[in-house]
Image (cartoon, rainbow, N blue to C red; front, side, top):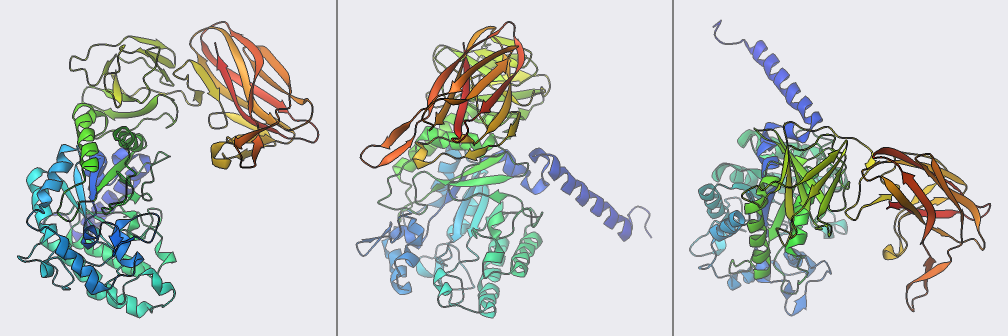
Length: 608
């Protein structure tokens, strides 16, 4: 035995220990996720590219619009029952001399994106590389032969972006035994599906993983779990094993068909199409999004999102530890529609100034909806710790309230200010107020930086002070409750707001920090359909109780001339409470309904 080298048993023990440590660290926060995904959570923003034969149709076939109101242009082959040979004729519309994938990579880079994911094979089964598995590929239908995956891979290498490849493994409309949804009527056997799997999926994936250099991720698109499909778990594990064998650093997303809960080796969760995050997650995740609605170019799609809306999607996801992959759908000449490129370039300009608050940033410890003025991201730095306040709505009074951070910042400044001119800061216990410039620095979204020597502690459960100086108390931010109640979501297109139905008795309490002592008005919004006053609502704080009988509110009309008669929710002034000094207070409410008619409580509101 060579003493300079560990034995096989020792090596196995060390590897086992390392693996256990890696798995354990995943449980304690996204910043300690598996090493493969570190670049992914640092990058935060990427480009999706939907481009293929369908791009030549532009959502219309023989004068007929795509047969589905979702207008997903890439589905036209299936939706409009196009013959395969005729579908291939769409390639005649492509301007191959003009098509240059490097232009897509340059747009991604100029837009502040760190990775690019191309639909190497979409559901139509057509490969955008020179595949030896099938002649249903771009190389066999272009002269001279083109390999779009190769050209894109070379461009990504040249410009320093990670390459991702989308591969439709579950659905394939070209192969006789690939899945398409008509097979719900005309079924195939598991053996036939496995024939497709072994003769197309596996060898094509081997090509992609072997011939195009480092692949950052393989992005699969099975939006249901394997248990609901014809795909077997064994087939998915076979595919994942091939990726781990040939490209150990390549990421695999949950749309492989295995959830992250089912398989800890899945690298990141993919949310639904255009589904943004709502909850902080401690592992990597991503939203795929579009600038309009369709993924492949659709000439009738005009649902363009605004640049500020797209930035809010990115910021919102990062504030919850998520990524955002924004799609382009180039036309048959390779050109990206102006409405898409314009918005992306505007995002890139914003990121040039404010990217520090996005790249390598993550969620702060306060709740995601703590403040009404915007979102928070943060990061550990060499010098200390920074919290970034993304201000969507610039307060009229030029005061930005931040509730819940226990330490004062060492300094505060606007991120876009190259001089980092200090902003005024007032801090009391768990409340910080930032004095803002008179003019909003950025017409889209401005970012204020709070610098700390170390990560500050927080106070949990506080109701944040709103930008206009009030406190909104509702079921989402209470600290305790008891009694009978039913939580009802908004209904009738939001004309009936979310509320709590109280049939008899209900108690709830909230915690808030009063930074300005004084007299505060107390309002309650509720609906009561009794014919006369009954029951009582009372609110107690600072050794003072205000109470009022529950008054009838009647009905209102939600939509004229539509027989849309709904409960009327009305704000009632219960009284005033004097807070003699700054500090934390508990606000308690007790609601007693009448004998036969429940009360529908919406919120409480406190303001000087």
